[in-house]
Each structure stands twice: as C-alpha cells, then as structure tokens.
Length: 229
Image (cartoon, rainbow, N blue to C red; front, side):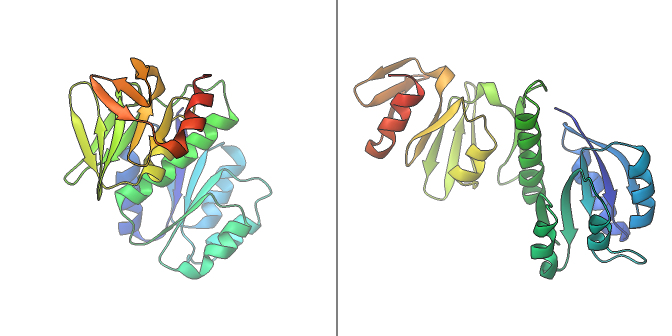
C-alpha cells in the first residue's frame, strides 16, 4: 500500500531531514510540504492525503491548534522538540510522536505502524511485501516472504534468509509488530518462524531451511492452535 503524505514544518533543517527520510521509504509518497499550518489546512480542504508529519511550535497557528480545528484527520505523526505536548497529541488521536532529534530507525518504526494499520483497515489494499531492517552500518530492504526465521542472540536478533543473515538490535516485539501476524509467530523466547517455510514438525522441534528450532513450553499451545493441530 502506498501512502501519500505531507510535511508541516517551519524549520528548514527539520523539513529536509523529513524529506530525506520519506524518500528512503518505498511506500511513502511526498505530495507537498508547508512551513505553516494555515497553508496546510487550505491544501487539505482540496486534497486527500493519508499521512501528515506535523510540527508543534509554528507561527500564527500551532500544530495542536491545527489538529483541534480539523473535524477529520489523516494519520498524524507529530515531530517536535518538546515532549510536553505528547499527552495532548494523543488526546487528539495522533498516531505517533517523534521527539527531535529522532533517528531513521525510529521514523521507520512509526511509518511501518501506520502502513500496517492502514492495511488492516483496508483489506483490499496490496499487502506490505517488504520491511526495512536496521543493521549496525546500514538499513536493509528485506522481502517479508524470504524470511525463514528470526533467532535471538543476546543483544541482537539474527534474521535468516535463504542466501544471507542480517543482524539487528531491534527487539522481538518491535520486529514482529512489522510482520504479518498470520505468517510469523514466536515459538520460543529466542526464536520466531515463518509458518509458510516450515518443512516439518518433529516432537517439540520445527525444521526450516535445515535448521531445527525448539518450541518452548509456554509457546506450544499457541503454536499448535495457529497451525490447527
């Protein structure tokens, strides 16, 4: 699913940072950008967008005042240097709150959640086929269907594909939240698997790609229900 978005930000460096981050994500399309909320409001009266990145402290009309004046809103991700407005933002149903200075990894987690929610609300839309995984030195664009399993290794996760392995410091919870719930399941405190890639199940072990993966006692019942055993 492709999401059309706008930026409402009056600081040029912050605007350029958002523009750069949006350009790195294939499912985001930047439709326009504004340095004040009034111009953005006029634009939204005539154009439909899926997602708005909104600063708080701006002249003439603040981001909070803009949200209060809108009877209908797209997905909203606030980008602000001030944490004080987080509670008010959530009262106004913003989807996420990025506290400046934020990283690309944090930005990516926020927009992935938006895409996941939009896909859930619109089942006829094209499903998400790729995710971005941050490694120590770069961000990798990974095909969801190619992921065989995920292994926890102390401070890291190892994401295993047929032809390579990717190491990331993301948590199980964070990474699994980006993946389709009907395809991926955690089967052990240190393992999650792609159900479609299971070759066989033998006693309390799953075989995927030649690797035997244990099924933890606390995960066994949920796993068996998922695969209708």
